[in-house]
Length: 480
Image (cartoon, rainbow, N blue to C red; front, side, top):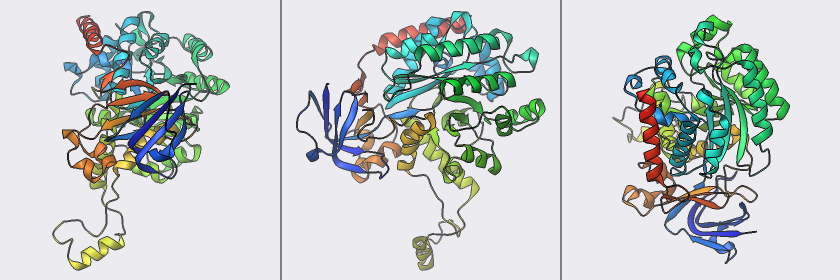
């Protein structure tokens, strides 16, 4: 079994004790971590040795929500300034022209971007299959990149004529959806630790599928022991749609169709109240937080800190590349931290100031700063990194990823701190610098002990050729 020794890095384990090793490393055997700690405590030799002096080393980031195919429709002029429903109506006719080759090339493009941002596991939500496209195209493309894939078999069955949002050209029959879902699970789903491909059942949203399909998808998923995923409570428009169509708010509707449980996670979950948060917490539902997309579409700010306070698992997602226009997950870690702070600024301070702050206020040190009597509970850089690693793994129900510990997958990324972008910051706090400073391309991304990015370059793909093929496909789609 091949071994890999990584040494002399500033290692962030993200384990239960949140241990950090200033001169840390890993000893890896056959794709799994065997030992983690100070370099001096590790074996001296291995089949391959990586000296990461001057680098910070973190667990691989976990992307909990994406739409790979949307890389082909980034920055489309007619969709640049639209809210969610109008944005969708603008892009549906373009997406109806997708081919199997388009699914393949967009998958590789999105995964390449993710790998270059430190991502090692990605969940994608593919919910339309025109012109013979299938989830098989995505799975085949992912194997050529080397990231772990949570392949969500999405679906849309409720067209405009039946009271839904999508046009007839991108919906499918429910009988075919369920039959294909079963085929994909039986063909590709690997439930074992270290799995490279797992299948998820993911009807698109309350406004694009019927209640029957939601219930039958849940029944099928639980029969096979796979997870469930959908968009939920992304906009106020959705709330009104659910009340008029189903007589429930979005979360209540999920309860009605048996879509609550630890095997379920929701994308966005912005427009929820305290009672609905308690439903999530009680049933252990997870949330994929997509801050950039939510800002881009003016959807709102998800109550992430409130979710975390009541014990709800929260992970991060870059969301569709036509509502984010990028697939940089480390940048999403930063956005999550910053947007959380904006929300704190809007909603105010906690009721009780800390003793230290009270002492500073009494001495006059706080005079003129306009901080009021309370103190903000700001998300820290390490908390944001937790969302991108341990949080994402918990949302996906994967216990084999998300932290650097013995027995876990050897999935990690490293960033060279000796660069202009981190000048000064890396001296004060190398971990926080990776989040606070402007996001960069990572220098190393490793999945199961295998380098996917080395020296800031993809190891298995020619990115120049990838861009050329991708742009050719994008032009053809827009030309019709």
